[in-house]
Length: 344
Image 1 (cartoon, rainbow, N blue to C red):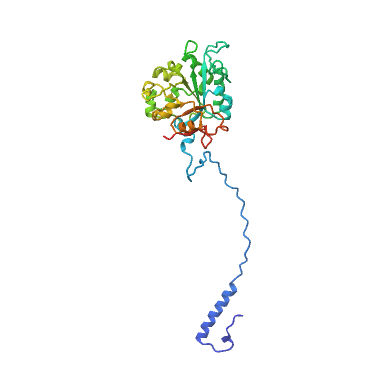
Image 2: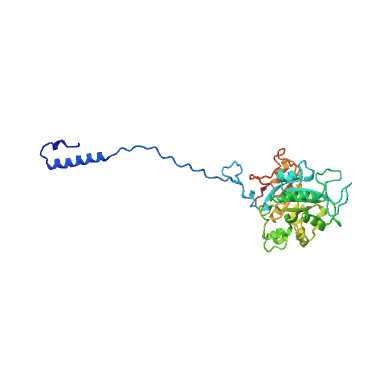
């Protein structure tokens, strides 16, 4: 017991009483104190880790920490702000047209066409695909190539741009109307025609209105479509006026070498520029500034590729299809897309 010594039969003073009360109070507190037993913590219920969705547009590796892939590499970028690797004379390459489109995911190819070929029957309304009579071609007819292209477009991948080089003059059964009829028959609703372009720009009735007020649709909007560009001197009669150019299925694509020709061909939205023209002039920049597209070709060395890709050219045609052998010949973006951005 907790009893003060001075309580043992002795007379207590007031001070003694006070001290006794304090001592008794302290003893009472000590008795109430309990020992706390440390119990093991209850195991927390196992919670599944939150699902982390992969970033569809991972940052491109960069020497500068924090620098991310430019937004233009994404499907939301305008088509004319993209730079594509294009296959020159796609029918002559080691890789088949199917592999170029389906396996390598290239979205810009060239076909040379002729109304006839030595030793072959005349087929009104269809064209033979080859460069010269004695040259090889993995594709016999334009209709055959368009069937392959349409099949790939049906997968709703990025738009395919087809450069059709007319090697011979247009003539009856092989004129612009016959070519348009074949394109419509083989490609159907996949075609992205000049009128479709104007339809993306409210109030635009011709290419001049469009270029002044709007820009090209985004790559996402153009998925599953096919754009036809007609090149070569023989293509000039395909569309000689703005009205005719707008009503065609394909886009007239004249070759130009100086800026004054942009006014001469105001009814064109796409232009062919030789490699020398791109390297020695600022014509590619002038075309780009007008919301129009450009293409060049014969870019088959790493040095030329480096110089050309520094220019605002939209399509760069090369014979170097295999990026395993020629890794420099690529416009592939870090998100796996077929084009790299052109700065606005």
